[in-house]
Figure 1 (cartoon, one colour):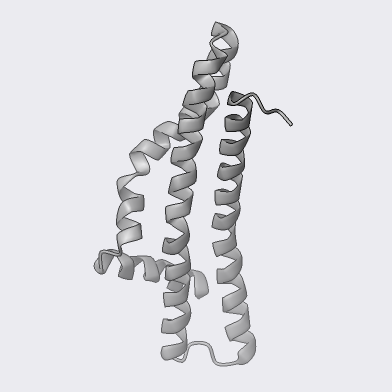
Figure 2: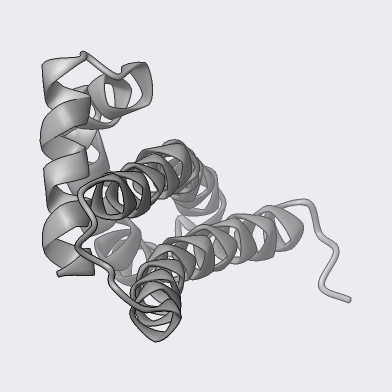
Length: 136
């Protein structure tokens, strides 16, 4: 019920032209390209011995992915907040246990996006530090 309401929250975001959702949707093509590039570039760099240019491109790729994940955070948290509010207003969560269960599921799902953001930020910092010559 909570997940279905969350997805309805996204439908409401579409209806209301929620800005972060619009930005996220507009960037999917670029992010898809960057997601493929960050896996191919190290292989190309290894075989061509052009490691420095590949590190720069990797940093750009991970920066694009990290920004996409950052934009995704308000989209997902807002959809969950809308879901909780609508379910409560409609009286579909009858007990405190149901309310806590729905909240727990939606919060856990939202934090997967926090984990994705932290992961992409970590990769960006990792490659940036290698590029800058700081391996420690």
